[in-house]
Length: 325
Image (cartoon, rainbow, N blue to C red; front, side, top):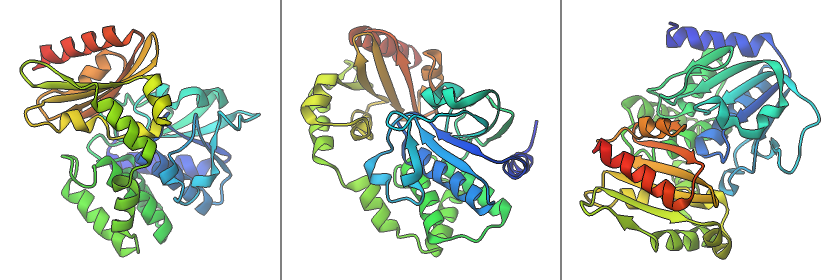
């Protein structure tokens, strides 16, 4: 098995030896996915390589200030007319997370898999996976250092964004001493930490607030107070004028109640499909739980999708959580 340093060298060779890359992150990208996408784009631009940045859908509005973010193609609006031999996947816990962008991979495509999820199985022809990294952006920080490129405020802000969002503003248990050391280093490159925190974590749009109110109105809890959940339906989304990005962070509300061990958000896709987001206080490994339903993630934060009704999905997931408490 390769050491992390050997994996970094393998990733360097992958980016140096080829050209004309497709860079993709997971569906419904968060701060870490977007920042990692643009960081790879920045690296490739420094190397003089051709590249295309893409996602299955739009990136969140509040992250459009990041360098190269305006170059991330939303394939729903701008389908490509070609395929790629060389692909870089960032922050995708498993291959399925690339979504419909896979249609642009050549059948024998060479894939560099850069990720930090413990459930990542090392897919691809080259893998740079560090499960104890707080964010994929932390790994990109190391890769940039491995190339020896000079840091700019723009690229430092992108890496800081990934760290900030995936650690919940440096509050989650993945906030290691190394994360704080890297954050300090990035601030030294001119990153405006308070401004990023306000933009990415504090400010809310009106639709975001409206859909949060609707979600909280559905809140239920098991009699012992250890499991709490909320749900959001397409009707809720329509009435609030909300987009998928407006759901980010809602799952933390049921989890944050004193005594709750697992908080859950059920997002209805349609009558027979529900997306499930899980957060744990620590006793339950929600990554393993999500994996049992075909999903994945981290010990304290994970997700999955069930091809079932809302009622059935709630029943199945709650019973599984109960069995683990």
